[in-house]
Image (cartoon, rainbow, N blue to C red; front, side, top):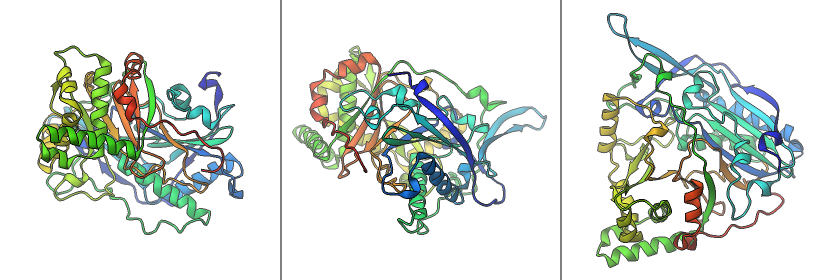
Length: 475
């Protein structure tokens, strides 16, 4: 197969703006937003079969027109997405620069929609069964491949690439992670999809959807003040580190497999006399335990090395008072289990590791969130790849995100995939399984050496559900 760069050609580009102007507005960054300035854009995408029953979508060019028109309508509500980032220097009484702040400049600058074609590429090429994700090919479906969130001072906050395949369409999203987290992002995409269906007369307009909340949270309950970063120019804090060579697998866990994993952990805990942890177990904890233990075993860490399982967690419902689900910003932290030496993690078993994840989640309370905000405010920083723990397992994204509800008017997605951004050895992103019912997919990224070792792990593969073949035709 030729290189992806030669197969994917961009045919056109357009700027999509909200349909009518509104007063210019500034939305200040909180600590949660500013901390993500050096991370990559969110790169998530949906793979579809080609439209068959909609005359208005008979070509991919028509699909692009349809998506762009619905996106413009969506931006009327989600207007910050069409903005840019801007910075402001802060000076002391003597005129010396003491720091910089960042805000969203909401002036309708627009998002970008690209139309591309992947010559000779089929749906089956994108989602080969029981094989590595073709990283170079899938990566070519996403724009802004190397961008970090701070680059939105010059680039759009949201860029969409619609790639025409031989028998399908891939819609790739590059979305600024400092603008909002995955919860808000998937809410935006689902409202956009509902708007697209309404334009085809397939559904009523999504007027009943609760509008997003753009007012930023502050710890004291008052108006959010811009956080000041300790630099004369924010670019001083940005760290662009190329990732190491990686392999990637998309692994499916059926609802039945997850129930069995949870029950095995429960029995381990009951045998150890920990009935409280056994009663509180979740399927998420059971899957996280499996990933943590098996990735640690594949790494062959030395006996004295410690490891943790880290989990991206949503702050909205844990604050008191809670933030609404519609809060449109970044509200996530990475929490971690207590450190444990690698041999002890494997010896203590599946149930202990699942309960350790549960304890970390339970400890993430309003009090702990406010303590972290206060600590960050006293010493502001941005996340970079240098903060990554080489012995940790990191679990991100969420199986609660409604990825497969994103029907733009010609059927549900065949699969969800992501680009190369924000990936490292031991990073796993969880997705909902396409069949629903509590199933999950795990997008697992490891170095080639560690992936080869994991492929020999019988405990791990006993829990993985074999891939179902991709069927042709309408999803």
